[in-house]
Length: 329
Image (cartoon, rainbow, N blue to C red):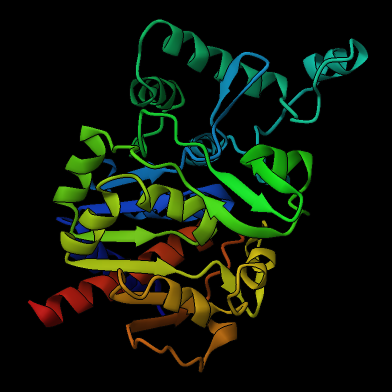
């Protein structure tokens, strides 16, 4: 394809996306990467990211929000791409001294990352909501899409395992997600913020990112009335599979699925979201899969190995979604 043809196609896609309002539900590395791709394809005021806070916890007196921070750091271009968490160019002086002093060092906090948690905890102690504290941090890091916590209330995810009920970070980090998960326990009576509900009420498209469905997406959908709004309001709901050829790119999704009674496949992800989605996006390595509930499908390369690949996947999804919207309008 000539450069002029590629430019013309890009301009057409920008025009097609110009009036879209998109909401992305995201947690973890896969969610952060797709959120970044969408941010590259859309204007800042077109995109809202609702982040999982089910893995938030207090550590050494600090409020830690791992999923929010992974998304925020990725959007800011300062994420540690090697680990998938924390900051690039990190140093570990404080953690090393904590270890020497016999402090709790199982959750690794780098010096730059600590500055985020100290600042957040300060603003929360001053009476700011988590939404306001997140907006403050995003502004300082020059993050333009709105990144909203799913709720300002605590909403801790617990895991019922073969070794008892474990708080999420104990299972995920301290135990390196090895205990077998029998059930994910989500809290009742947690409510979405007005900003989250406003974003969903205005959304043309809601995208469920390629995040772990049980511990990244379900905690968001569990917050009232997010699931109901996703089911009823957007013109199109899209889910992107975190499973490629039976494996997860990163994290415990592939391990958890058979533990919880699901086939370890992209098709099982589509079935899990069947009551919500209109379009299912999955990797070309899974080409030819049969989907029981027959949503619209996009089979493409979903492996986001670079910022350019993140944007390419985001544009593939948006272009397919716009075509479907035009066909049904």
